[in-house]
Length: 84
Image (cartoon, rainbow, N blue to C red; front, top):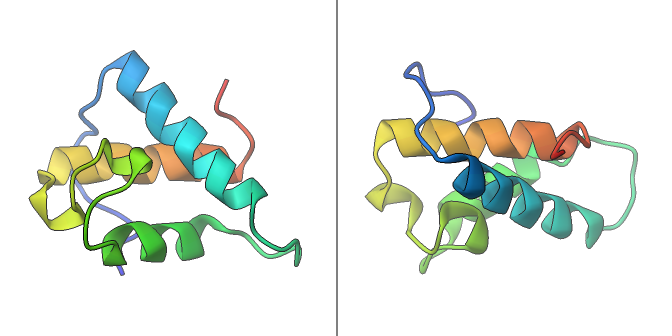
């Protein structure tokens, strides 16, 4: 599972909000265990065969590295309850 991409994130402010919100909605629907849901969320996104709202409907493998970095950044913010 990819949890870091060493390139600058590429998304508009609206896309960032969409990705962060989608991650937060997913995280809030999971059972509360006290553990971070950052990695489980990324695992789900990366395994999705058809894309998710958090990847703007694209499969993980179709995203550029910069777009993957944007998804990771948004997921990290969602896990920290910082979507804004």
